[in-house]
Length: 438
Image 1 (tube, rainbow, N blue to C red):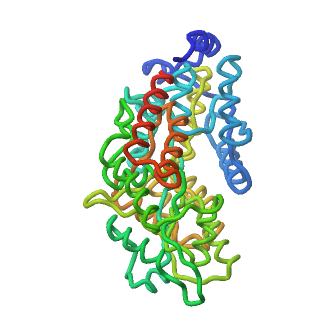
Image 2 (image 1 turned 180 degrees about the vertical axis):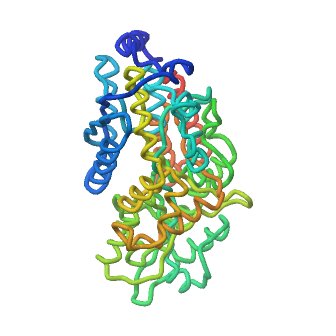
């Protein structure tokens, strides 16, 4: 359980950082306010965010100034925010995911964005229909508070080598689990034209990847109140891993990202990747010298259960006066305007939260990395097709549970543990983590 002292200190330190009542919010004047934003961006992402901040600072009608400060990676920012919750020295906006926001909200820091979204004076207005509001539930608590603002997404997809699949006698990527198993086993039993030892599906202990398999059966790992690792879709996903590994149709990559290097040398037929990794796949093919026709698709799925898991790096409002909160919200709103969304996507390869902005991306010459444009377009079209979206639980226990999922994957594969035993251990650990977080 969380120590009561921490919460008391947080509430005292952040006393003015409570979202203004809806009636008060409408009359707040943010003119001339300066706000601080801690972000995690580097390289081209940092350059693009700096440009967007400068555009906002020079054009917003209220003379609001955003001071954007790079504070390292997500772990660095978590440590700084947790220290700031106790000391009271916090910025206005911080980078994070939904589970980070849930932790900060529990400690009295993260603010509910619903009043801003619903505000007559400050809400999305004409942008409401364009904004991808289908992302908001993934950053919301079961009680309804919106605790982090989605302004970008990436997605998890299956990269497949159609050249190799054709050599194996398959016309395209598997759409069902049975077909996927058949393709993985065919690859594992195949020797390439130059004597290459081709392998099957690369199994990693990535917990988010595992969730994509669960979601492809219509399942979840958290039902809104409890972890449900003993549910049928989760058990089936573990059994898939166990069976493929036991049958020699899957393998454990030798090191991190080895599955990507194998894919780019024609040594496996498919592997799971984030869309944020497209540039690295392209470069891996360049480095290997191997040429193949490859693309990306959703995971194989049960009938009627096609799904795309989205990752939602977000921005969290963690305090300030009512004037600073409104100013922070206006900056957030500027990031999801169509032009800003298109600028972000074309520069970084992430998907923006403006449908109109994404529709502007019709030419590879607009991309900073034009070689990823074909793969970006496949996923962008999928996002806009009405496909069901999935994202991991936005609860504070999730950070701990991810590690437990990784252990369970190792248990049912290389450690030789039965699925039943591994799931029992995982369920008990997740229940404890959830109880400890409350």
